[in-house]
Image 1 (tube, rainbow, N blue to C red):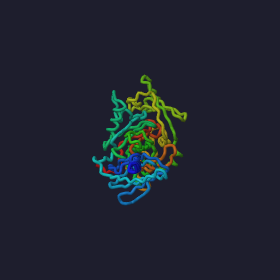
Image 2 (cartoon, helix red, strand yellow):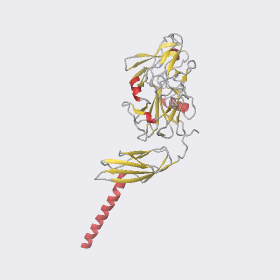
Image 3 (cartoon, one colour):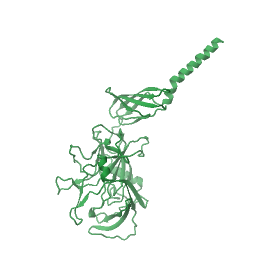
Image 4 (tube, one colour):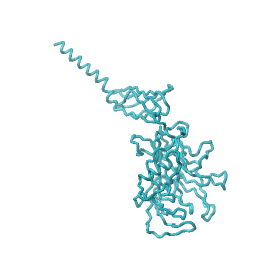
Length: 406
């Protein structure tokens, strides 16, 4: 009898011991080791809850730091090597102390520094729409997306036009663009240029587009995550810009009789627009571009765009509508604002952008992103300049500044 009781006690203690050692490992949901290509995220999602959490990272050089006090942690590094993570649940009832090793290795296929994918192309009406890239009868949203991708992917640099205010494009790379401390992270090329008649002045052609960025937080490969705005001086932007601006464009009646304006304007009441500020006007048609200006692959009779609207930056220096100058925004982190090669007072390239400038679209407060997977650029002005037409952002190329050109 005593022997039988001793057997059951031993069996019970063995069961309890196994449960104590084994249960946290199963329910924690973390592996002891991971292998990850550089610039690719490893999402660590513990299955246990607790009162407080702590993630400590030891880098290959031995430097140790607490990197998060949240339950979930996203590991993302650009340097090769062996990284050690320690995860703690600080809880009297269910304390956890787990060590994890992450081996960051070279990618199997060399990353490209240039755009690899266009996820969406939705321009607003404009004089280069249906021409840059070219629309042909039968084109769809998907085929025009592919055409936009072919125009700016890699080092092609054929370019796309975004049309008037709000028109946008969303693109990404074949890897996560890293946010490297004290360095600018990516470059976007437009077609701004300085006026040869005004040397030394930051004026000429400047059609600024605002940049939004996002990290693929849910790892589904599509840009449905939280967007943040790249803003060099968020306080200044808040003062000079129209926040929460909305505009609606109306498809023109194909049977409408043109209403010619002065000079090169072939239809001054071509495409009507209204905004949420009580204003209305028209995208005018000119004799230099005779194709339809409303995106022909879009079936909607109305197009609505929302965003931050920058103030007008143009001046009719001729006084009669024949010569306009557009002043560049000196504190703006915008696409197509400065020409390539322009530098600021500290010698930094104007068209090189820093992920650390990301702010909440509504809060305008700085946020910290380890990296970004998606970039959205949209035309940020609602401005018409006579024979020059509407202000429309053009985009030709984008590049990860941390990846060597091939």
